[in-house]
Amino acid sequence: GGKAALLAALAAGRGATLLAAEKQPHRARLVERALAGNPGPYQVITADGTRPPWLPGTFDRILMDVPCSGLGALRRRPEARWRRRAEDLEAFSPLQRALLREALKAVRVGGVVGYATCSPHLAETRVVVEDVLKGRGGEPVEAEWVDARPLMPGVPALGDGPDVQLWPHLHGTDAMYLALLRRTG
Image (cartoon, rainbow, N blue to C red; front, side, top):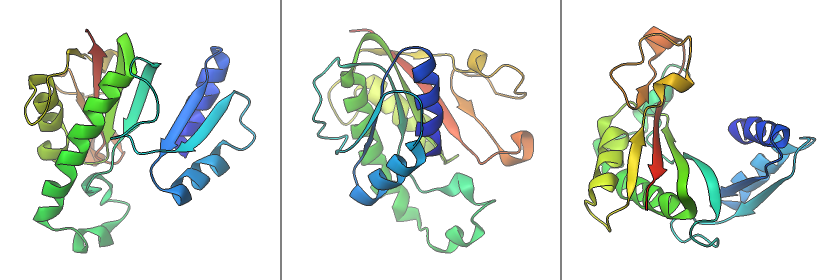
C-alpha cells in the first residue's frame, strides 16, 4: 500500500493513472485504504499477474513488488527466520519468473518494468532476472537491463549494477533489490 500511495501521488503530478493489482482480495482492500484521499486517478483491482486481465502492451511502466521469502526484512521481523525453509526459495522462483515475463509483455515496446523484492538471495533477485532475459524455463522475452543506479543519487555503495541491492548495514534499509528492464520487442 505504501508504494502504491507514493506512485499514485507521483503519477497524479504527471497526469498519469495508477493501476494497482493484488491477487488476494484482502490485500487489495489494504492497498485501497492506503490510497484513500490520494489526489490522482487510480484503480485497485484483484487480479493474478500470471494470468492478467489486461492486454499486452497496455502500460508505460510497471513496478512489480513480487512475493518472496522476505529474508531482506529480517532486521524488522526477526521471528520470520523461524518460518522460512530452504524449500521456500524453490516455491517462489517459478512464480517470480512468471510474473516478470507477464509484466514485460504488459508494457509497450520501450516501456520499463521495475522488478523489486525484499530479499537479498540470488535465487529471488539476479538469477530470476537473468533467467527471464535468457529465456530459461519459459518463452524468451525481448528486453534489456537498464542501469538502476543513476535513479538513486546520493545513495552510496550501490555495487557494480545494473541492478541495485540495498543492505541494512550499508543503507539503513531492508535488504531490498531492484532491477529495471526495458522491453525492446
